[in-house]
Image (cartoon, rainbow, N blue to C red; front, side, top):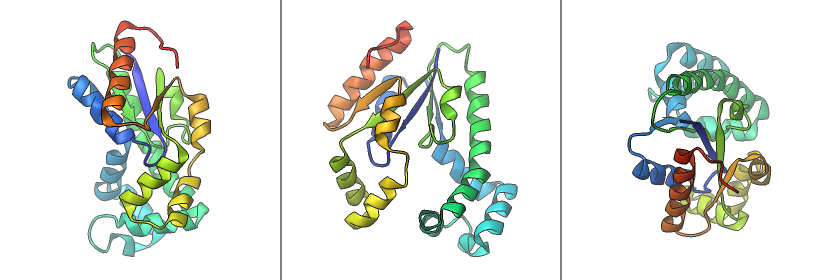
Length: 203
């Protein structure tokens, strides 16, 4: 079965789409890059040491990594953002490449939830890539509701990512999430049918 990368923009509904896939394919394997990053940052001594060296020991003052503090730093400093990515991304990429390869002969699908899939060149490890997208206005509205950020700061978070239009242009499949969960789940159901049949669906 193919290894399928799932990505999108912040607050476009990727997590909800993944839950739909989990409901439709409970036996499938799912790899969560964000969870892997949290585990590495909190539990891996080498990674903790590198992050402390780059950001200072205060980011671990409560025991685990203070993600809010690090997020504030990296959004204001592109060099710090690159430094954090260089610590985490190669390790995450190695993890999910090994998982995908070990699953190649399985009868079940393998999904890799990678928010920065294109930014890290991870699409080369996928048989298919799905981009979950929505309109810019709805993306901004969802992000503001989720984070409580004012409009300007929320837009800054969106602008710090690769443009969603570029991701859409590079995707094998685009899931459009301007509607409700039922609409999203139906798109997931259609894609599952195509993947299981070994066919490549029309976008």
